[in-house]
Picture 1 (cartoon, helix red, strand yellow):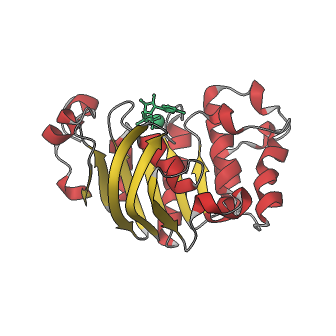
Picture 2 (cartoon, rainbow, N blue to C red):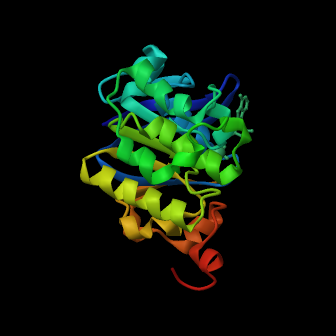
Length: 236
Ligand SMILES: Nc1ncnc2c1ncn2[C@@H]1O[C@H](COP(=O)(O)OP(=O)(O)O)[C@@H](O)[C@H]1O
Ligand SMILES: [Mg+2]
């Protein structure tokens, strides 16, 4: 579903990760790495928002950077780390409808109902609280129910109810065969989903891909990622 071939990502004159080759199929993959290691850049490159510096990435049969944005947005649901970044409409309802109008998707309104309380529908997205904005931001992309989801820090700012809803949406999506990458520092929250693999950006700018069951605290700490003993104050 996602194939990287000799892919180098970064910005002109500033390569971040070089010569990546990997294939990811359906399931849940958790992308980990220190601040500034390139997690967001990798997601944006797969989403087609940033041009690969070298090599190529193929997602669901297309090279996302080479096709029109609305074609890529119909196949790949990329959700912003900063929810306010993606807002363009003056009402939440229009924000959610925007991607349906652009991509022609039918819309999975169950996802919207799970995340966005009805009373927010007529609000201006820029007046929302951080957590409310995160809910709307996630719903306004995932409503298109694309086969590939790339979620950048989706749990940040969500309360108990929001996290429960998102986990339910992710469980349902994985059951329907989607290919999902989640960037998160709050990765113990994904344990109940039994992720398939972790992708770890290491200090030497490599990308290590392995089974979730082999996630190792020492390796995480060496790579600048919060180890589980620190997050949970014990084991988790
Ligand atoms: N447009 C840009 N031009 C140059 N450098 C950038 C640009 N955007 C991000 N960076 C830098 O690239 C590195 C990786 O950023 P990013 O992928 O956002 O990291 P993170 O792993 O925290 O998500 C950081 O050092 C960041 O400052
Ligand atoms: Mg980031």
